[in-house]
Image (cartoon, helix red, strand yellow):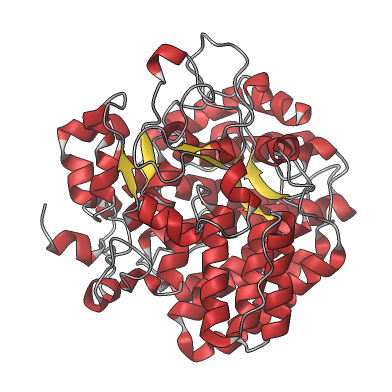
Length: 514
């Protein structure tokens, strides 16, 4: 991690050059390549590659740091989060309930909610800046960079293709169809590509890289903060599971591939669920770089990372003594409604997560605490800071449960049960011993809700399993017509139309009015 920080510092000048160039862009594909900014002599060493990668990660994190992205895109839209009476900035925070009714346009344009900058989520230009930078890096690796050969070249190529595929996967889950390109200096306008095709391209591009990437990097400080083989496997699993829903004619193929990938990850024993399940051990997981970490945006106050106050999901669900100062944090700003909490954590069911991760779990007010993210509390009682946690993207428990889900979809019920009980055993919860079929699939879905609450995954699980259309699973269901017309997507900012006659916005959001 120290190397990463040094690299970040070393690319300040490069980053400023990028920023001035990007701001001058007329559309998302007219991005100045590195060669035009720094000359063809930029890639002269391994250090140059590291510096560019540090910039690329920082650029992606800018999108996560713009607003409450993890909550807005992955949690709030299903309708179970409410604002606590008496919460700080109560009127502004009501945007969360607006998102919970899928009223994204109101969240974007109502001036009461400007504090949240929801409209920034609809802009994809920074994602394409990441893709453009990666495309150039890949082309230079293919040409050959002095001092970057053999296993180093293989690892950097695999890492670059991981970042590119991850960025496309992230955008697909937000916008549906997106323009797809891999050329280093592409400047021609392009139409949007079908999202299934985009992900299939990413799967084909990334799959050969999996076995070129080591299970662990030489520096333990980079575990999770930079992708290794486990991260590639997790991303491939997620892309296959997404396509299984939207390409049903080939779902068996996708499920089979997800099972094979999950089995390889589990059998490798290179990652583990951190145990025993105690506050101290869970603090290690939420801090980041643990044996459970597959991929994360590692941020720490110790390295001077400037995380915006609104960016962490946990900002909204902690009160004193998990958040300081005491006089302004007597209440959690938000809470998960008790009907939902009782659905996933029924009272009386053995599950240590219920007692360890929450306080006042069914209070329906600001006494609710999502203590899951409250272990790494900021040291000073006078600073208005959130606990110092990582921004987790993929972790081992998520991959295990995806594997269980894919097994269940293929009728491999015993393997699915064994996998889901791996997660429940760590949580000191009663083991699943019910039947297969729909009961098992529903149980695995609920287990994902239990284990991954607050990690920005639930809404996407609702979409890809199509449970988003059932009031049994969400307080804000979509109709079949809304689902088919893209009511689950985000609007795309009109700037995407600039200089691109082939571009179309998401019709659902352009036709429902404000």
